[in-house]
Image (cartoon, rainbow over all chains, first blue to last red):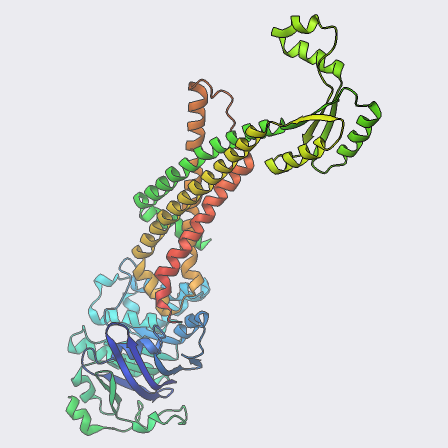
Length: 252
Length: 290
């Protein structure tokens, strides 16, 4: 589903943000992407979302390949890849309902279908009762749920989350994380960037990809980097067993 | 309809910015409009003069009627020639008596008509340039019964130099103000894009097509150009009325032809689209890696 093959991303002024990174996240898998600030987590997410292209190597997301994708295909890809930001990026003047509906309107969903779908999405993230609230009237956790509902609006196959719990208190963070686990159990591939060591330690069954200075220094499901592996759930997926437990303790 | 609705909403959100851009574009294009009126009047005056460009061949007194008839037929077949007119010696004298009133006494007392017969050649539009006039003059001079050929050598050349100068000035001034208009509209659209950057980022993130995101800004550019063009047109008309009503010598100045007006307003609209497209391309293209 997400395949990085010897991916390097260099920037003219700051040098390499990512260096020779190879991994494969299978369909329906849940993986943590971790590392210190500046380790390259966001670059991995940007590459997966085709906000940037690799300087070397290839990124394959679903049927889209970085070496062959055409510019006009990028919006299609992005509808297949939901993106959750740490800082929410909600439109302040719109209610929770309107923020979710916005994603549907701008991607051409027929007007009649929008109402039903927004209702369903807000119920799915547990916010049906706050549909008419403005972002400023919502707690951090609730805002992140609205963002998640918006990311799910286009029925993506993959959900990318960039430090989604970074601005939340532990209880709200856990709630949001459990929401992602539920979404994953419904079959969606989830790649969650975090530097929250506690979160990783509390969820030993989840695969961990750790970056350090742009290099992948740990993949707790090393078999998953096998280029010819099937695109089915990996052994360290949501329902898989613990992997890389020793290194996980080190991270923690 | 959505792009138009959003473009209008953008004007409502920042009326001052939109108004300033439109006014600034209107003022830039006003200069162009006033120059257009001048250029049109200069052009019209030149055309008037051009229509009078004539090559005149004065004939020897012993030229026979048959020779002249054959020459006229030949000359009428030249592609450059619009009209061939023969003025006999008698007609020349009648004309002289009529036109040169001061010398009417001199012409009254003549026993022998000293004026020569002449052939007057009027040239077709497109052949009134110096080269064509000289070529026709040379051909006319080639007839053995033609004693002398006149075509106002000096002023024909000056006339065309003036026309070239007017065309050059129009191109330079037009180009300069077009660039100014593009920069102004581009800045205005860029500001509109920046004021909606959050919204645009979300659209790009969730997978709105580029066309969907760009169209309102292109429409905004077109509307800015169109309104600027209409303001310029209105102000140019005010300026025209002002000069025509108040200054002597300006009573007969011509207003712009309709085709120029339509072309000017459409041109301003097109400039708006081009400027907006550049702004959109620069500001929105960054989100697409390819």
